[in-house]
Amino acid sequence: MRIAYLDCFAGIAGDMFLGALIDAGVPPQVLRDATAALGVGASLKIDKVVRSGISCTKVNVLEGDHLAEQSQPGYTQQAETQHQHKTGHAHEHAHADPDAPAPARDLARTHVHERSLTAIRTLIQGAALTEPVKLTAIRVFELLGETEARIHNVVVDDIHFHEVGAIDAIVDIVAASAGIHHLNIGAWHCSPINVGSGTVVCAHGTFPVPAPATADLLRGCPTYSAHVQQELVTPTGAALLRVLDPVFGPQPAMRVEQIGYGAGTRNAERFPNVVRLSIGEAAEPDEFPEQSQRETVTVLETALDDLSPQVIAHVAEAALALGALDVMLTPVIMKKGRPGTLLTVLCKPSDARALERLILSESSTLGLRIRQDRRSCLDRRHATVSTPYGEIRIKIGLLAGETLNASPEFEDCRAAAAKHHIAVKQVQQAAIAAYLQQFPPGEGRS
Image 1 (cartoon, rainbow, N blue to C red):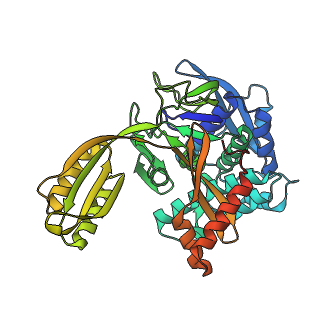
Image 2 (cartoon, rainbow, N blue to C red):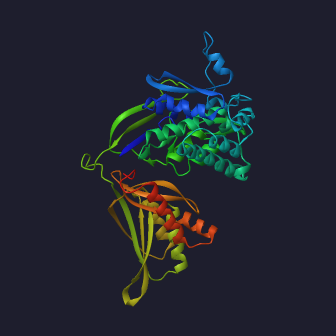
């Protein structure tokens, strides 16, 4: 299976991702065609640059007057990037292509701070792009809209984008979607994400890094702050990661065939401001026997025969909130024929001490058993399928790139069933049928 690994040691932004795609082998014309399809009078300027001694690709979006300027002798002006838009130097208006469809002309004439999700969705749906590219690009903007709605406590349809509504950000997202589908990657993987530090000036004021939208989009992702005091992850970069839905961690066992470096705007000394994209084939298990899908977990266990079921349920919920991987409650018969409950908690070794204290302090036990177990885990990723009842996420389990399990997310099915007043199993069956139609056995499932 063809896989990809993103090294986000210097964060990620839309322009950086575009540069990495081209540097790793995506034909520039794929991205240029996607940009032209929008009909907003924009184009891509692609250059080879150096960042702290690393040769990489820099992509700038040129708009309106910049296109004419580029053809003049001695032209050196760089197009404003998403980073620069975020500091308040956005263009007041974009320039429309007179031959473009009406939605594109209307959007291009709209002030950069007044682009709604509906307007952007209409623009993308009306462009001459393949359906998968449209769906991916629209999903990125939906994620951005949902984030803004949460931050500002408004309905998502009332959101009017600020920085990410600029023409360059729209082009970044659409071109990136085209590049993603051109690569046809079976599974994406990603390192923990360096978000940087310091402060950033947004449309609503000065905030600590990461900016509010970026922080919200990176919920649940492994992040850290190191090396420089500057913003390293933009909302566009974070939303693209969300759509890719990568497996986070170290690089998996793979035979790397292509490596691409995408440049950010800044060129800090001794800090290569780039994102690295490695593409290749997933290694077979017998090629790297030491890279097995096994890990060590700590098991905490105790039997309780004198504790209220209400308290036992509370302990189980508290353990999950504290980071337990799983909690099991098993009915058992204890000494003197007393019915009891066997409480079993699985956790990472690093979380064992905190969970041990929780069980000892919250339950009535006087002691517990602790052991280290080895467990074998499938790699996990998600796919989204369309059913008559709405979109349903499918949880996929893979071993060495081969799909072994696929099941609909129960909460998605339950919500859809409640909305349409049907049985949950009916939604589950529709989701599996849609998944098998989209990924027939032996086609695109490994």
